[in-house]
Amino acid sequence: MAAQSYFPVPPGVGMEENFFSLDDILLSQERLPSRTECTFPRLGFLEKSTDSPHILEGSKMELPLWLAKGLYERKRRVLSVELPKVYKEGWRTVFTADPNVVDLHKMGPYYYGLGSQMLNFDSPENPEIAQALLQTFIGRFRRTMDSSQNAYNEDTSAFVEKLDCLEKSLFKSGQSGLNGFQSWEKGQASQLTASSLVLNYRKRKINDLQP
Amino acid sequence: MDASEVEFVAEKEVVQIIPNFSLDKIYLIGGDLGPFNPGLPVNVPVWLALNLKQRQKCRIVPPEWMDVDKLEEMRDLERKEETFTPVPSPYYMELTKLLLNHASDNIPKADEIRTLVKDLWDTRIAKLRLSADSFINQQEAHAKLDNLTLMEVNTIRAFLLDSLNCMYKLRSNLQPGSTKGQSNDY
Image (tube, rainbow over the protein chains, first blue to last red):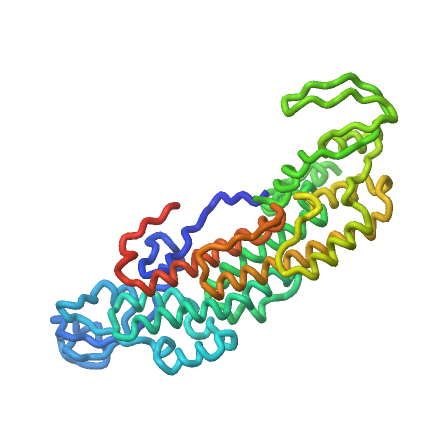
């Protein structure tokens, strides 16, 4: 029986991240082009391109998501964040035309996650971004389902590398369902096998000790 | 749920055997099992039938539906219909595997039966995937599927639930502000 002793916290796919999810933590490392709306006094040492002691208003920087989210606030106008080009108009039309062709891993391995986080930044294109995310997911679902349920004991890496992390975890759960069924049908489910912990631990076996 | 757990539940089904020993009626918690007389058929659950067969104390009578002609009919009907047809037994897959592995000498044309049941299974799984796909494509809220067996549901359950969860969360992005402060359970 495949009982897990460690249940990883799944990523929060919507606008709120899960604090404990490793996927969300890695996702928040993605850099976003942003522009400061006010000066940051005495922080000039962080900005290598200019020599001033302060970060001036209007300077363009690439900030990671966690920093941008923390600093963003509508009323005080500290920061304005630009959309990465994958979520802009041009790419959105590509996605609506045919979602299956795109290599989502290259577009940032966390396409859906980052897209949902971008909705926090109150850009005027928010409804279109949300709609594009949903339509892309639905369009790619068929391919993911078919290949995860049908590729038994085959090399799937060529297909999997074009998937975003969210789709990869879906693919994995589909594969595990398939593998469970196939191994039951072959009768492997009732065979006793040595646990991988024991094999890897390399305990001395009695057969090796006795000459 | 594991496939082996579904098989365990399936072993409760009743099958007919012909014992070659005699025993008085036995009273188990699950029910009474009638007196065993050599040569007279008696109905027992599958787990007992398999155990007796392995100890060579009985002969298993194949269930009515495990017949080449009947299965061929059902397979052709399944291929014609777009929805799921009534299934020979709610545990047809598990019973086929168990009975054909342990008692294939008592069942005529065992290989053909295995092939036919596999065809039936493949057709049903293909229909299931088609309906899951249209479910997601049209973003329905709920669907009703008749005549599905536990084994079929079990193979697709993890994948479908995960993808429906993702779809739900992506959909809730479309209505901002209504989902702030949602609780997650671990």
